[in-house]
Amino acid sequence: MSHNWDKFAQRVEETEIYFTHYALFEEPDDAVPAGLYIDAATQQPTQELTLTPPIYERVFTRHHGQDYTAPTVASGTLPYFVDPPGFPPTPAPPPIVGLIQQLTGAPQAVVEANTSVLLVAIGQFLAEGTTTARKHGDNFEVDKTFRFQVRIRTGFIFKPPGNPAGNVGVLVGFLDMGTIHQLIQLPPPPNPAEVVVYDWKAQFTLSTDHHYTRKIANEPKPVADPFDPALAKIDFQGCEVDHHGRYTIVGHGRPNQVTFNAPPELVQFLFGTTQLTDVEFALSETGILVPL
Image (tube, rainbow, N blue to C red):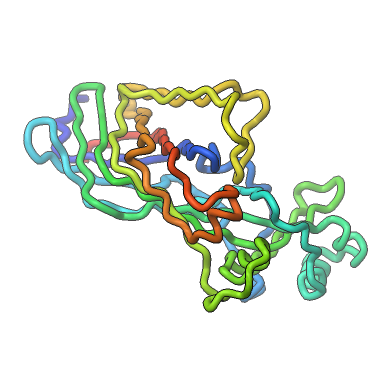
């Protein structure tokens, strides 16, 4: 069946994201352990670490010819695991141990011995700038400003020995300025309760015709998510729209296009420097185009 494609939805189901010095990760992130997650503030289960595609959906309307426009929308929240250097292996405080005991029935000693700090980055693509696209036959591309903003969710996770299905995570709060100052041994800040927020921003084109390949052997170890030792290179490849509407689009921002915004204390803590000047931001999106 043919369609005139005057209007169509772009449903983004998977994405891979790379930032120099920081991480290479995918959404949904299969590294997030399955289990029961509790918000310590409410002591109720939370689904905030579960990502159910689509990551977001854009609806494009033909502007003229093969050009389209869409309202700019934010993605849902995108959780991924991080392991920044220098974060202390803090033991779970008694109230957290007690809550996990209550939920699992495990003895106190077992809970204490098998509970560790939980750090989950909660990312989100923000709605910024205009979103335009071009579709010509099987080729598809999107132009927009990509701004990926992150907060770090903190907590503890209990992993009972021999029972992965019994994992219980307790989410306590978000990384704040007071904690960052403690970690890098600075005097207390005037805003200790302020949540630490950081983001990358670049304007570029994602296209089915693009690819992004980068050798990683000589790069510094990424601080948030170390590469798999078996990974020889980063390789994002675009893929034309097939007869089911499935596609992959790829793009990247070069260092002179990418802005990294973060409190200086966080930059010092994560990267051991006060300024990053050579950051690349690469993105691959896979999904389906659906004529409306």
